[in-house]
Structures are given as C-alpha cells and as structure tokens.
Length: 319
Image 1 (tube, rainbow, N blue to C red):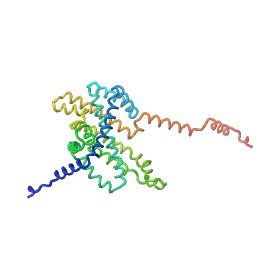
Image 2: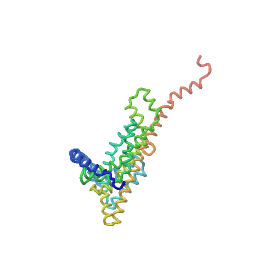
Image 3: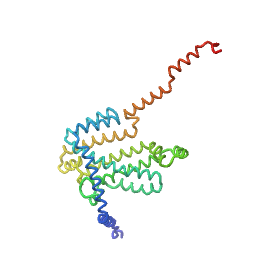
Image 4: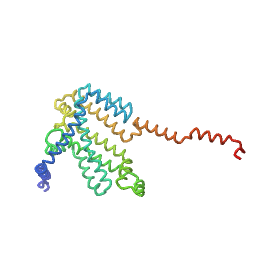
C-alpha cells in the first residue's frame, strides 16, 4: 500500500527554488557582485606580491603567534609549495578560504551569541545546524549553482553553509559555559548586558570561540575540491583534473599543498585562543609587567637606608 504513496518533497523544493530565482534575482545578483568583489581583492592581495614577500609575511605571523619553530616550519612548507609549482593555486585557495571563513564567522558568532542569550533561539537554531552538518557537501552546490551561476561565488556560498555550524555551536557553548556567579557579580555592580557580554562573557569564552573559528577555517579549506567543481579554481581544480586524468603526481602535489596550508592555518588559529601560552610577544610583555610590578613593590634605597639607620640607632638617642 505504501508503494503507491509518494511525498512530492522534491517537487515542492524545486517550486520554492523557482519562486526564489524569479522574485529575488536582484538580491542574488547583489550578493554575487559583493562576494565576488571581496574575493577578487583578497586574491589580488595574496597573488600579486612576489612569493618571497608572502612567505616572509606569513612566517612573521606564525613567528609572532606561535614561536620560531612554527615560523621556520611555515617557511619550509611554503617553499615546498613554490617548488612543486602550486604557489598561485595555493594563494587562490587561501583567498577562497579566508573570504568564506570570514563571512561564515560574521554569521556564526552573532548567531551563537543570540542563541546563548535566548533559549527559544537556541531551540530553533539547533535542528537547523544539525541539518547543515549532516547534509552531504555536494548537495550545497545544487542551489548555489542555480542561484549564483558558475564560478567562485557559488563555491564560497556552499562553503559558508557547510562550515558555519561549528562556529555557532561553540560560540553558544562558550558563552553558556561562563560561570553564572561572575555574570551575576557584574550585573550587581551595575554593568549593562552589553558590557557584561563584551567584558566578561566573550573574554572568558574566547578559547572555546577560537576553537569554533579553527573548525570553520578547517572545514572551509576542506571544501576546496568540491568548490572547484563549480569553477572556484585553486588547488581543487588541479585535484579534480588529476582525478579525471588519473594523474597521481599532480594529485599528490596539489594535495600536499592543501595539507601544508591546513597545518599552518590550524596551528596559527589554535594559538590565537591562548596567546599567553604560545606567543613570544605575549610572553615578553608578561615578563616586563612582572618585572615592573616587582620593581614597584620593592623598597627604594632611601627607604632601606632609613630603616637601617633606625635599627642601628642607640636606644636612648631618641630622647
């Protein structure tokens, strides 16, 4: 009996997409223009400078955030990318990852904060995030192509939908995990909800939020191959070509370049959540503050001399 019954869910979805494309075409044209323009600017910033300049900049960032070992590892890894002739593709992939991750963060962090402050929003958002995380990544490409055409923009939009869920979840988790007594103490001293959020909840939740940032970046980078199937280019394009031609060498070179970018981004973003423990600059500032505090609390030579003179004075000299 059930064989004769069919739920026309696919037809309903197709009808809805047709309505969207017919009535909201202008909106999607604006989104395509804005996202495409941002990507072009970021890609130009990464690809126009000589490779040696970009290697130095990225190595300096790794050095300041994580230390000299990470800086040296970044130099070696990026030099390998240059030597296998994948530099331009790697920078295009890095630009796509940066743009997609930043846009995903602009959506994920405010939504996570809202969900943390409202149980109703959290109850609504949770099943949507479950849907986004369990849906196969290739499925995102279908509406992205329909709404935005072929090119880098549908790849970025699909990447945002695929990657933003962990950022929302971990932002909400971090803020909800802040000790209630600290929040209540801030409210008792007259702090507004916005000030409590900025000065208490977000700083204390920062390590958890940065874990979400790391996850968004990693998931964005993992979409490069899928995004290349809709014309996004970068390292994913070479991987797709290697798959079509059964070219093991090209596939290994492009895949290794993705791995190197992933390691660099992973280590750097992980260190951002605990700069005091990893950053040489933060450690140096901490030592200077400690030395300054110790110097301020130490007695001056004049005070020491005065105390010594009192202690060595004759018992009756004060009369």
